[in-house]
Length: 442
Image 1 (tube, rainbow, N blue to C red):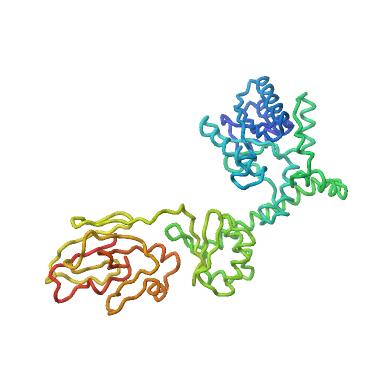
Image 2 (spheres, rainbow, N blue to C red; image 1 turned 90 degrees about the horizontal axis):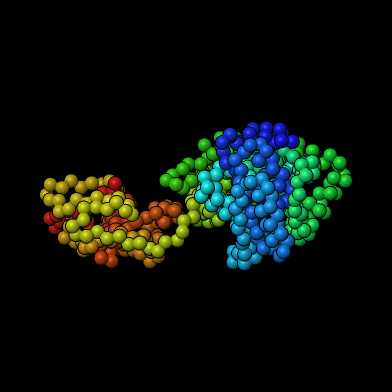
């Protein structure tokens, strides 16, 4: 088993000689065998044990046991206790999710603080089958049905080559004691219910159920790779990266018969699930613009011609930037250069939308730069009456994201320039103008 383990570690888990591994050590057969195998494979290994304080004295006994085991191997052990139930209530998550979040946050801290390369967990073949059925029950794409991966970022799972029975037999052969978590026998948790009640029924139907499932997951993994490669080719034609936001062409989406599948594979990495994608497809068919969809990390806007995917950033208070009378430009929030008091008699009017020119005598300093607000209005150049900015945006087919990106230049309370788009008629150059102040983007 040590030989097979070492082969899998190097070939499937991306491990190289000299790298350091931190084992997530619970004290159960899986993690005990994992630490023992790594140690005897000559790996530079340490261990981390979490006491989640969920099983009273049993949790404390687990902690004492792993201390004894690591002392016996002379392996560095890191230990930490957590108030898991309190954390779960504060975060509004399940006990399982709370424990997962707490341990992996701590494991990653240990990796950084101690210059370690990998976290190793004791997941094995049977865990992979359980994960398949959990994902199937919750709803997932093809990727979620292809089993647990041997490497995922800095997380490796060197025991996936072996079954639970293989691991327990190894512990017996090596005379390794291990702890049994009594909560594993309770079917309160979904994974335990699968393990204790549901999967045994499949094994009754098919004695080779485990091997059959691994073949199935292997085939699904191949399908997943093929599908992902196809999606990557589609994305090249479908998705455009524009200054950090992704534009997904609706025209191209409508060319696909199975829009839901294509969109799910494109959007799933950004946290959008199948339910949201189904709603999105209905929205596309209804030809409604302006509707927004959210994942935890991204916002998706259905515009006239595109789906616009934008990372969600922490909300910020509105910022106002000032231009003093002696300022010659700003770099933030938008780069604007200023040329002052140019002689009107020799000045040549610039019609570029990235340039604005005003009668210097009409400007009231300090000028301000800010975002637009509901109710804002100005007098567009060439017009004699006021127009709401919201109407201006509609007339000029601004998307939601375009409106959010707009900056305004103000003189006093007057909006004199929708930066990069339109100036105000009240501040235009005329036959009375003597001096010109020119603003240029960039």
